[in-house]
Image (tube, rainbow, N blue to C red; front, side, top):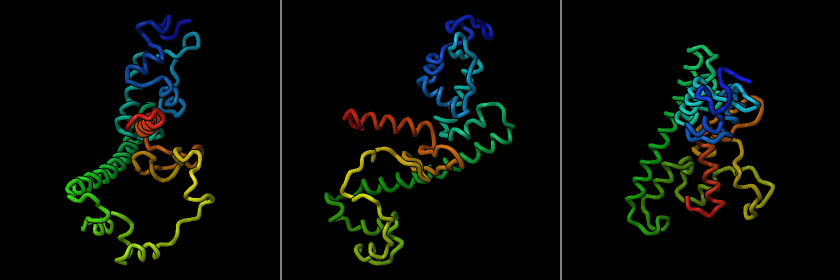
Length: 224
């Protein structure tokens, strides 16, 4: 059987899924995942195996740029990569994600500014000795919403968080597994949850891969 002039997966016209993934430093499961999410169409097959011609290799590269480099959510990246949406529609998705990235950059700049400030602290015990700590807490944490000078008094002014069914001292199995929320489990970037289906935990493929790598290092005892 021949598709698009390909006699087998070694034909110069097309390559296997492993070769297609390796071209961009990915693993085959990532391409299958992107196919399932609609970022990539399923390629032609020869003898039941996926074959990627030049056009689909370009599409994988565009998916990499959108998902890994640009950090776009998969559903938004699909508007760009599939070639089935008008220019105005997919560019609107890009502009929307640009705003998300700009907000993330602003948070990272704030983090960088604080860490640069913290690195100048001369105290060995910051909690005990730093005369600026209270001001930093008031400026950078929700503690600043309460005017009380004493932290114990300020803490009593906050409503308690919703009680959990287990004690704080008891470790719960699966604590290392992130749960869906309004923020990415890796970078804390804003998440837009779908109305139906599985809830998102990560804002991008890059963040998902970073979490997998961090988990693997933790399980092997390797330092981050």
